[in-house]
Length: 148
Image (cartoon, rainbow, N blue to C red; front, side, top):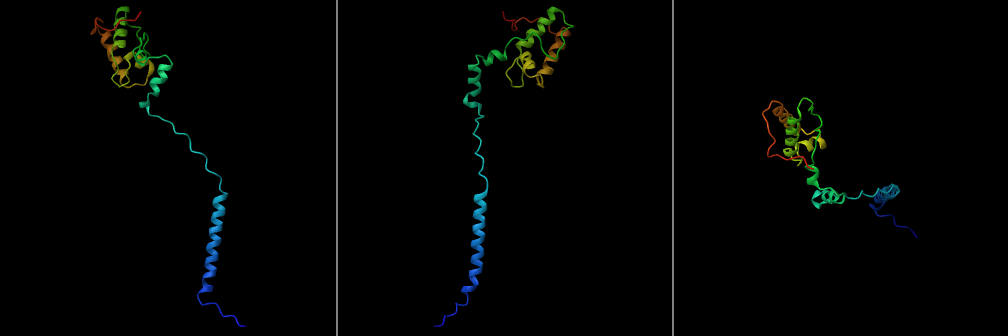
């Protein structure tokens, strides 16, 4: 009995198919040997629209408006030593009555306490101090009074 020879193109395809199968096996082995990916970090909701900040302040017993308008006697970074008691009172009352225009919602005095780097309140407080020193503001009538 004689064996019939392989058809002419069949033997040519065995070697490339064996190489492809070997490469696929090596890729699968490499893929399975990699360490697992760490789990994704949990999502953090940074959207203040959910009222998180308001809730935290409420739970702490703090009212945001009360903090932003609290009375401040000593305004950091401004020397009031040259003012007599009447002018000092005028300056402090105005600083505790006027709002900062940077958008923080604080009075000028409170903004200087809570954000000493504010580029808006510093020149406004300095201008107020200069006006009081020069006598341009002589009365604090109609402005906020010291509580208590």
